[in-house]
Length: 481
Image (tube, rainbow, N blue to C red; front, side, top):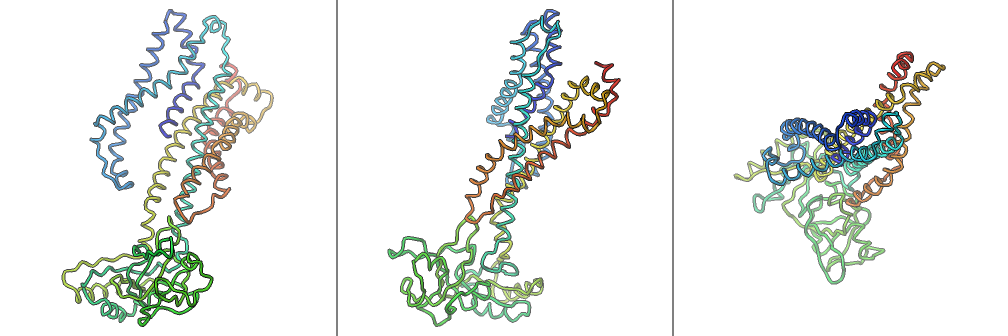
């Protein structure tokens, strides 16, 4: 899209120079130049600029590879540019640019009339219409990218701050390898430190639950966990009704709200799951990323090697030192692996964060390209209206009125671009949000803000040149004319 935007910007620039090119063609034709000579001159000019741009881009690519490697977690090498697919791609892009850049010239040559040129009868209305359409396209792409960026950032912020149904901050996870040490002895030793308020052993944790039960009695996947008595209190999961699991509950279990609904039970009492009595209901909690909806879950008593430790707020250093020393004293040459829950869940949205960074960079590039196009347009408009501005100023027009005259087209273009881009942006972002079971709303203010930002950027781009044209001495303008 940025490549297309750049080509459109270049074509727009060529169309803006229509009057200048028309005069150039006229002078060359009256001096005996044929269409072949004019086209060759034009193509050599294009190729010279493209060659210069290509050399500059290679330097920029070489300098920016480390940045993109870090951003996308890949290993790009400059040698990729020497591969056959890349060379073929460059040639295709080159042909694409030349083709699009030649279209305005070919149209001009096909309709060029030497007599009209000598009589100074040049109509530029159709050309202005083409310029307007291309400018609207550029502004539409800018609105589309800004809208996408706003939605993406809003969704990432939403999933990072959504209530997961358990308290993930100040919560540490330690993976204990099989038979590396005595699970319960290690947990009891950790609880002796004053900064550790609670600890629990389980088979699976939120974010890493793979065990499930399958039965002919139900058609859905029923996830399962082994937990101890401290699991609910350590994780901060709410017990809605009934009693917690205990060491003596070999044939009992507790389920989440989604499981109760999935089984079609209106009441949990005297109900069984896979031969186990349901003795309690816990509030739904997210045990996977927010890309997935909460699934049915059953929890039964069991001591396994997934240890979760709750710290006092803001006091980790002494507690972590105690855990490491205890680990080293109770194991031999076993690596100590751990992570904090909040960082773990945030890392599950790394792909979206990288996409957000990339969209920010590409949006800035697209906006700069659009601004360059708009800047070229206002220069062209102010030059073409030099005589009109001079006459208006002599007749008492204010600077603000002249600026309004020059900027009005850009306001109209942004309004049309907003109408064009908003439905496309809504559809595209709605499809992207389908990747999440829990998603933010596509609020109206996102589209309004994208439109206002684009309008503000457009007006900031053109206002300086408009002000220069509006404050110019009208005598100079008319003398020039």
